[in-house]
Length: 129
Image (tube, rainbow, N blue to C red):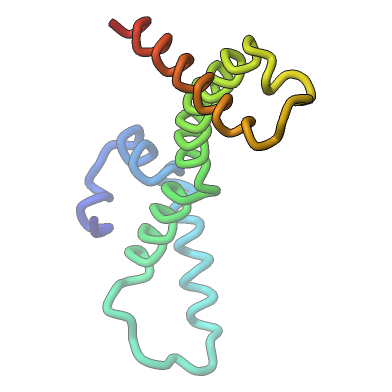
């Protein structure tokens, strides 16, 4: 969105969109214009005005400040998945094969673990129905 469209908004709508009040925006714009005048090399002129560049930068910072929103969403999904896994581990510990040290023949451990996990899966499937 260009600054020409944004400056027509009311103060509350401007602050909601940009993140800062219009007075502070104009102060920042004045500081940018002063810094732009003190440059020795101008380089290629930007297709965007300083106000548009500032608006773009503030919008970027507002949206991607620390990826906080994405982190919260990921933590929520991860916690939901972790709870399900912990419940399954709890059900496996009921059979004491994961709870204590396995003292039987090692070659039968895989078969017994598969049988127990099959029983747990069957129990979980019965609960869903």
